[in-house]
Amino acid sequence: MDDNQLLRYSRHILLPEVDFLGQEKLTKSSVLIIGAGGLGSPAALYLAASGVGQLIICDDDVVDLTNLQRQIIHHTDSIGQAKSTSAQKTLTKINPEIEVIAQQKHVDDANLQALVTQVDAVVDASDNFTTRHQINTVCVANHKPLISGAAVRFEGQVSVFDLSQENSPCYHCLYPTNGENNDMPCATMGIFAPLTGIIGCMQAAETLKVLLGIGQTLNGRLLLLDSLTMQWRSITLGKDPGCRICNSQHTTMT
Image (cartoon, rainbow, N blue to C red; front, side, top):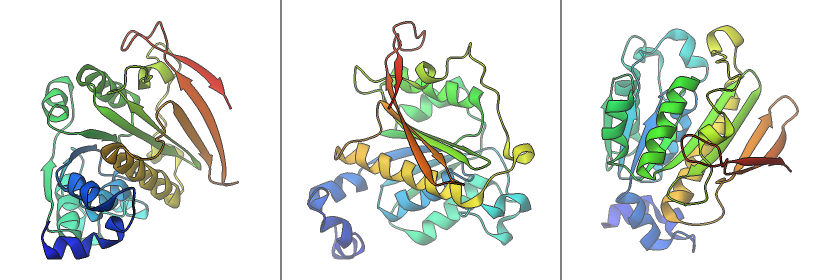
């Protein structure tokens, strides 16, 4: 790192758990963020500010006026632009030293495989179960850490499925495709704006911990937040022996 980078990331470098070597590791890391909406916005902002060397932002949508209530990476003059491109512009202004790649595309099994293989971690900030299951399947196949978040109305959740670890459950263990998982879009259900910021920031924090190999991540745990009461619940997740994706799971409440 040069002198400018040492100054930019000095508050990270002061942390013994990060230090110079950890920050240097971040600058050499690559993260795929799927979704540049309510969750992807804060996650991307903090990963960029933290110096993750390459961010790939994948979203096929365009910015709409209704997005601006919570999707803080976009601005009023971004309306009509591709979300991936709008996010790229904002992130480059925050940290011009990193590489931000905008992908205006709908993810499917084929392009997910190509994207996931080239990164160190995947942030799932999508808004539907179909996409989440597609992401999970590819992450399992490539043993990539998956940092998952969701938010609707006043309720949010976040977890880590570190598929580089043999005993980690996967997203399908938690939400099997034969279960009753109905999408609840913000357009019909509504969403409390700061909730997406809370969950998205937690996804960024968990991603940095995964990349640095520090602390205790949410791997094997699901955190649920009721933002009306600001109460958290924790669910311990284990492998499902019958999971058709990773052959694993067992869940217990704590």
